Length: 470
Ligand SMILES: Nc1ncnc2c1ncn2[C@@H]1O[C@H](COP(=O)(O)OP(=O)(O)OP(=O)(O)O)[C@@H](O)[C@H]1O
Ligand SMILES: [Mg+2]
Image (cartoon, rainbow, N blue to C red; front, top):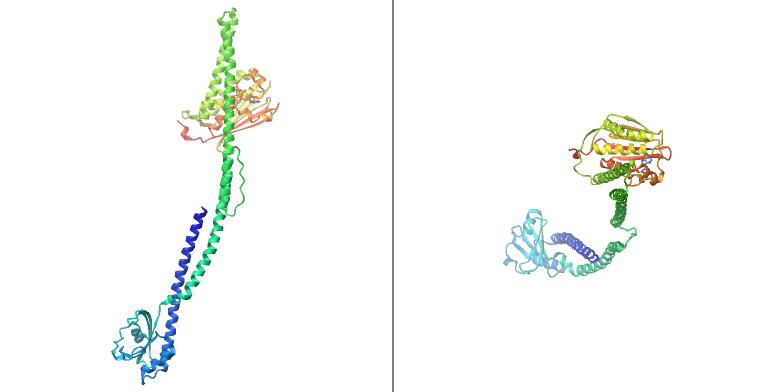
């Protein structure tokens, strides 16, 4: 990369030098040409002032030529028709052709002065011709000098150009090297840091660089590494949750299965003869299988909610009738626990799956009854606010310790294992509630105080994704 930057830098510099050189030589040539023309015109004007047109013109031209002191300079005098009257280089001017068609002569006749640049027919070298009309207006004076423009000064200019190019190149090489290094050095350092990716727990440290883009690369790497770490943590956590779930689920199934097997073996071996005892065993077997069925149903429900199964039947659910249905079904349990249920329901509807909303109410109210005190109360309120439906289930029960507040939504989590065993249940109820709430993009909050009671607040958006409605 360093080489590539270096090369590009030199290429750009060479292009710039060539461009500057070309522009300079064009401008310089123009100035030089202008200057020379004016000087020659000046000489012609002086000559015009000194020449006596009535005496020998050739002799006078030779004197002027001597003063001008340049071998190749040639001065010619024409009449108005372009006939040569005298020429500093030719002794017998009568042999010379008419010059009225020459560009510089025509221009002088028409405008007082004229210029032309062309190869001399006699010398075969580039010449500059300048002519002017004499003061009396009868003659045209012309001076011709060899002129090769800027090349005339090549002897002075080329060494100067070569020295400045060499000098510029040396400085440019040094600067290009430094510039390339200033880019590649941070990149190499970033690359070196990136090698840490092979390590198990990489910690990146980047310097503050001169170029903002480098800092942006470093920041992005830091952010990416943070995100990767977070997702690794999440994966680890999910792995642990899954393992815990499997061990809990198998444990929850193993216990009732063991007792069912025990009862069956007792019945099979005719150890129990008392008919009442036999009936009692069969009732227990039935209860255990019912428990297992409801456990499996709960697990299936969570798994369906987690995978956001497509074939969930959606309809307009009227909340109040559904709530009273749930309360009626829980009335025997409430009576048994000595708890009263109060409801305050605003007539609202939601597009949802009836079974899921029913599960949500059942689990929250069931808990509020189960974890209540004798003569306790359960208050269920359904209201709405802006675009949300708010469901509040409040009880005057045992409350939940602060450290368990967030864990109660985990699968199989129970605050008091011993007591929960007595009460029954698997610890999946609140997990189902949480999954239902997530399914509808809602939120759930919990306020609780030990021995005072708990308040579960569910917020469900009124508008659900209509793709889900069948
Ligand atoms: N209203 C409440 N008051 C006090 N504790 C509660 C309340 N609701 C839940 N808990 C605590 O949170 C735990 C988890 O509740 P969750 O509903 O998930 O399981 P569960 O009621 O034990 O079993 P399941 O609901 O599967 O029958 C409960 O075991 C209980 O300790
Ligand atoms: Mg429960």
